[in-house]
Amino acid sequence: MRKILFGILIALATGSCTNNQKHSGDASRSVSQTDSAENWTLLPFTRIDSVNPVLKPGTGSFIDPILKKNVLWEEKDVFNPAIVQRDGRIYMLYRAQDKTGKPAGTSRIGLAVSTDAVHFTRMKAPVFYPDNDAYKKLEWTGGCEDPRVVADSLGTYYMTYTAFDGQTARLLVATSTDLLHWKKYGSVFAKAYNGKYADKWSKSGSIVSTYKNGQAVATKINGKYWMYWGDTQIWSATSDDLINWTPVEMKAGEQPPVKLRSQAANMPQLKVVLPTREGKFDSDLVESGPPAMLTDKGILLIYNSRNMQAYGDKSLPDGTYAAGQVLFDKNDPTKILKRVSTYFMRPEKPYEITGQVNQVCFLEGLTQFKNKWYLYYGTGDSKIAVAVKE
Image (cartoon, rainbow, N blue to C red):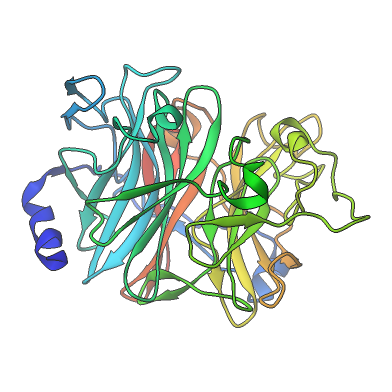
């Protein structure tokens, strides 16, 4: 049945979205020679300008189960995609916004497929969205945002995503065997510490994985699955089943490495595993990117960040989202071994500089396809682009 459903995906789709720009230069030139020479980073990546943006807002429509009317669910913006590789194809689960929900449009998750990693054909209707179910109060009207997807050893897919009710973002999880039909489980933290983190602001769950044939497969470390999460500082959590997660708290007497701001200040017990850095591109916030990669050298996490000139990199505009890389100890996922000194990707192209949110490259999807690494990212919270490592 799974293969049949994957086969009919092409027939159900409506169209692809590309442009005809020329190939660009090296997007990783901002990383220092020292970082690259140490050979732990996944670099360099080059934007594929001949196809970027690979996905733009579309004309797909469906009957929304809550509104009970036809909705142009991806007409406003598309961005922040997860990537799954299966049967020689690349599947993109992407966040899309309409123009009706509040505050910035309701988000739903669409599905597009590619046979070459750069040209995508999308389905007409979303595959994941707020519904009249037990999770409506968490997902409506803001929607379902920013998916990240890993598989387990048996081929079930686990999607962490942000549910936004218009006021609070919460990290939730769902599963699927075919990417078309999903089962929701609610908050990843519902059962931890009597639920004290379930209603706290939480986002961006990046589960530590081994990349097998281009697919991120969740992999245990010392008997536990691990996840990096958060969008102010980056914290960690552990799980036995990929559904229920327990945040890692600080030990008695331990102090956070930075002054906590914003939502982070509401969770002072949590152990910060990747802090912001004054004077650098990642001064204002750090946020997990694609599923973290378990390697022989350690756990490689590509992460997103936001800069503020007042206490960050004065060469970058306020609010710039740029990307970095960090290596954690594979035996202690809370311990940093290496971290790049500066960004390897920042907004440079018009579609990255201007959008729903200006100055944004937000990396979220990664796969290895035909001996090349492809990195997919949201641009200006409006479109989706891709960069490649040969």
